[in-house]
Length: 291
Length: 156
Image (cartoon, rainbow over all chains, first blue to last red; front, top):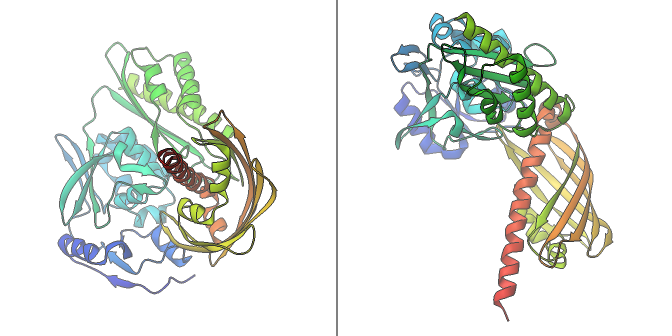
């Protein structure tokens, strides 16, 4: 398990990195934490001719609370998210999800931008950003653009990132005071990719009526997906256990068509989705009452 | 891995039958096909390069043999693929039924075995990858049927 030969560049500025990516085109891959790319290279499943290492570029790792929300740098380590008081306060859903993301060693090295750009369909962070309606800041030599999470994940390991473009930051909108969150997943072993998982964001008014619900599912499609049927079932209602259960059941039938593999059949995944949606929303609602 | 399903082509059955047996059409339709040539009656060989996310270097030597043919409604594709990162072997049964004069319903069912590194590392993703490749192939075949049907109409 050694990689095929490749050229290695270690630029010290973003401009330099973008120039290298433009110069080498699709042959070049940016290297962030290397927790997916390097194993794929060592198995020779990936054989990029050029690696552009982002680790020496200053200013790409930060967690900044702003008035409009939380801004997180693309090269921020997952472990930094896990330990950040700002993340816990301003984006508790990210905090709740972190212990499920792989293992400590991987979180220590792995980055926010790397996980999102890799876009594994069973990864936690892409679904969390979708549930939080986050946007991604993409930079290339041609300029900067912002892409919403719902437009960013386009398919299996496929994102809106164009060749030569880097994901440099994530904007998580400021949370409403009347919103709360729930995160649930099932995996065969702790730290494995999830068989199925749910990240839920629920907003209620002072009378306990649900005014908004945004629920993202992962491990259940070729990318993280929203559960519109679940949101519709909760909207305008007081979220009793019966309403949550019925909406989750309906969403598990209408909003997903999961595939089978040796770990779980399609039917089992659908069952898990219903149970996890129910639990995640119930958790969010009870957090809401406690708030 | 079992892959089953149906797909409706917007064209008559004999046309769909011909397209499904034409290596040039299959080479255009199957994603990542670099070469597919006829290698004797009902036998095609070629090279396919699978590219999904981080996997960018999975090249396979493939051979496809058509068997059990009952024109224009039934055939079996015996598929073998071999590459440095793994191997693929399986049978796909295809049945074509007329749905009126201008549409053809294809039923397919296949049992595919995948082994080697690609199966060891990517087991949980094989199903999704297979489905996404099939969808691309069917969309491409549908376009082929469309273009054949419309050129057929324009020529007297």
